[in-house]
Image (cartoon, rainbow, N blue to C red; front, side):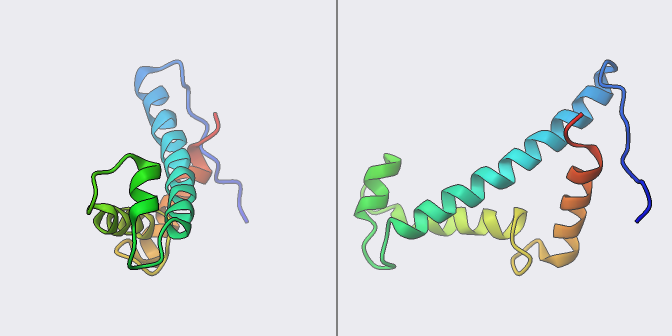
Length: 101
């Protein structure tokens, strides 16, 4: 594999923002994956009262919240969701080539 890491001058305002975006996207992907793992253990697919209590949600919205979070995971983390494998590869490449500076 070729060395394709992109070195960015973070002292430049736009350079700093580009690296910040990559770092935050990397953190967001990890955070959403972690939250969805918790969500999946806080309900049985029928009863969401524990999930609602742990997240401070109003009664009756747990299923919708779980669905929304799972959609976000599919978009940002999973290869089978709305983002698709190609888009996931592009997100991963963006983070890998720019984040961490």
